[in-house]
Length: 423
Image (cartoon, rainbow, N blue to C red):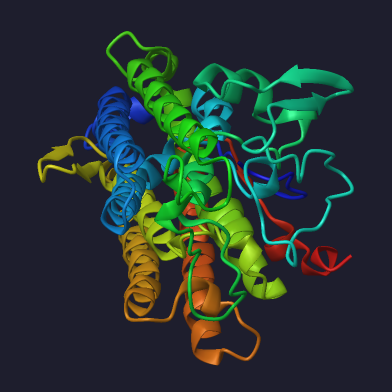
């Protein structure tokens, strides 16, 4: 979930002939159809992998072991890959952006959900529920009222606990709640190592560690089931008569603006700023997107790839099949081949920069280690991604101007007003 952002990069709209007037270009309607088809395929893949995650969670709960816990972790990582590519459909699409917090909200006060290390636990003065530990407590006080938490169901998580008291840090659902329940806290700071929750936290009866293993299992299964339901809803929104698809096709010019808004805002304010530059400025592993699992490199890479997918009109599905068609790239190239060539080059560069981080993390230097004060190699890699994304955004802005669209790209203090970060 995007934090409040203080700055907007405004791209000035120039008077231009309607897009359809350029015979060499694909029709905007065809570009939008490809975009919607890629969105639908990406969310379908996210659903399929989430269903595999749910099955792995059920296997872990049924027979807790080091092997079933690792299998559930592997399924979680696999589920992130298609989902992160769908983030390029946020921002411009209000329906997607409003829904996104249910599945990918971060950061979270994990003490709301389960036990946390006593030495690391600290009350958030702005959040009365920061250490509520619903797994250990069958009743809670929310907004001054006593709430029955004896049954941890998907409905309870979605309707009562998620963003309780209107606080965004009260994240009770989605990928990151599941991530915490699989990995536990990462207590290593910017040192080596991710969360190390033992499989015994899910043993029922004798041998249970962490207490309340039955309720922890109940929570994990409820969160996994809810994630599947939420993704099923979003797949439906991109069907032929779905709300997200029809909102785009009602006005082709507005649809192109939506595409550009999503690309630019994810590229600049969200990925370059809030998810990448901010953590490096603060040298704070709590600012990394996947802070329990140390899998932020996976998220960053597939976010960058998702932006490229949208521009090129091409998405490779989990099963290896390809969805492709008329693209924004073709639309831009028909008006100015140089602008298209530069943006294509910049997209390649940002994906390569994200891949460099990915390869380094897979080789042993986790993303949170890259954020450490004094890690010059890590800082160079992280800054390399930030710089590539900022450069890419400037090229997106040129495409916006070329196409005569009016787009507001979300900003971030970390990029636009760095002094404010430390105030």
